[in-house]
Length: 252
Image 1: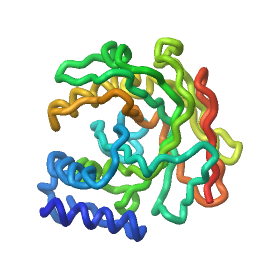
Image 2: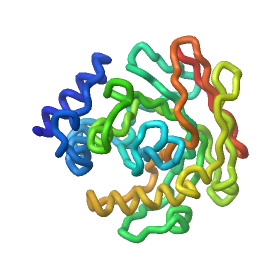
Image 3: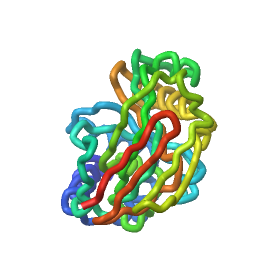
Image 4: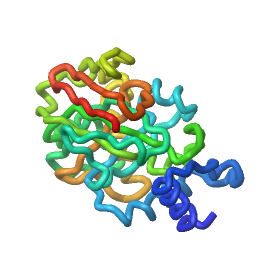
């Protein structure tokens, strides 16, 4: 498949809210490497402020039927300001999930990076909520499809950070509520046993696939801690993180 054509079709699907049939339905050879190739083409059109991990928790893998982590990029113009509503009419099938966010204090790269090295290079860890939105009908996709779609990126919200050694990340708890009702709970260990291990996986994968690493000042969403909850106009989503505070947004 022509990667530029795939990129154009995905961009059009996002702009016009017109979900696609997965490319792998007709082209089974559209594999993960092909999907990342499309993602790189799309990334070139954006100001990249960091990276996002997908499917780093068992809950998320079971929800979408894909059993391997993937990565995508964070675009500057997708960021949501504190107090800013999510305009769901611009999305296809939005879902919200709480995540732990790493803000890098130093560059880190290489094929053998460990969680300890990630923590040493991290400036702060913050609460985050990501709103995902698949450009495929009914969130049905194979790994190549998902990578090409920038792992369902839509918009994201980041709270105030704390130094990583101020909090015990694997046991740090989060409660996700929708319209005042608890819909899910989790702890940091839901993400590959330790969220820093997920970021270390990202560093190794970026080095292997693209010959790059994380840069000082970049942010990394380490992956959904819970299953993603569907949202629609009128909903209010809140994620309460132990030691990191509360994030909330309204849907319009």
